[in-house]
Image (cartoon, rainbow, N blue to C red):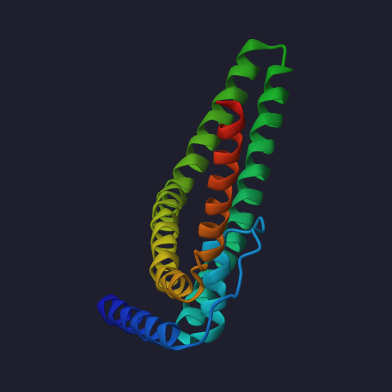
Length: 184
């Protein structure tokens, strides 16, 4: 299944590159804005390619599901942390040492059971973070793979004419010669 998705994604990328290389100008000029140009170009390409659009939708769905899951988990752990913190404070307020020890033991056992219940969550969170890192790296690679042909085409179609720079250099040389004639 994963191999089929990869093959489909690669085919989509090659289709996108063909479309981009045979389509019109990407941008007549770059205004030097503060946005990441790779992202800017990539999202232009996304608008023109259903495969890329589907990938972006899948990424968005992932982040939404992760956010929902982590919000519930964080709320759960915060509630439990608050309970155990308050329980320890209550236990420490007990003046009789035997009663206090009994309360501390109850809290310790309860907190140990709670921590063991979280072990499955900890492995899921570790896996999520590892896979999210891989997703981000592959997403960046995809952006570069998609946008590099766009930039190549832009470079081919928009390389400025050199004649004005050559004329300016000739004028500069003439001025330099005039100044040298006077000063040397």
